Amino acid sequence: MSATAARSEYASLLNSTLPAVIRSEAENERLIAMLEELDRKGNRMSKAERRMAELLTLLIEDFEEKHYALKPAGSIGVLQELMLANNLKQKDLLDVFATPSIASEVLSGKRRLNTDHIRKLSRRFRVSPEVFF
Image (tube, rainbow, N blue to C red):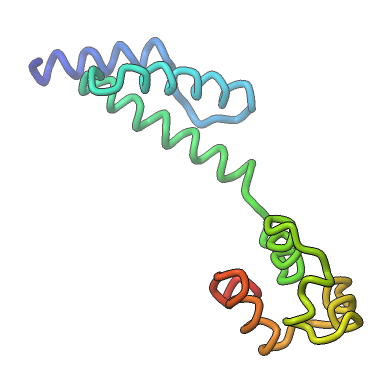
């Protein structure tokens, strides 16, 4: 396909799709559906369709980063998620906290994690100590 034909095809795709900065969930869903339709073509996508898929991906990512951004989790929130993911209860962490009262105070937010706790937790869950900061 010539460069002129590829530009013409891309212009036609732009005209039929009318991509723009996404401002609503409905518009996001519309562009996602278009992107999925292009993705189903796989290797059969033309150069113009690949460019359109790239543009749609950028627009969708921009919208979703702004509207679905995860809030940073605190160290206790991270610990609670790790416990949930590993089906652990407070009593299962006595090797980290030494006593039930310390475990209770940490998990309730009354006491902060110290460096020894963080070191033991990062080993136990095989995560970087940084996740607790």
